Image 1 (spheres, rainbow, N blue to C red):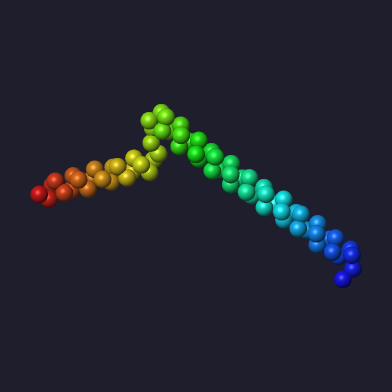
Image 2: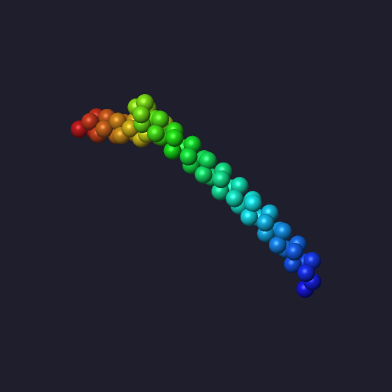
Length: 69
């Protein structure tokens, strides 16, 4: 193996490392944004959509049970 090939391989690894770092940074940004949204929702007293849906499902179940009795 010649020295030139070794250098080329090394440069390729740098590109991959940079790409991985970019992906990790994007994931961290998404995570931080999601966390901030949750905090603001908690402070304002608002809930996420899925929480409303789950509560509505519970209400429907209770109504069905009452009707059956």
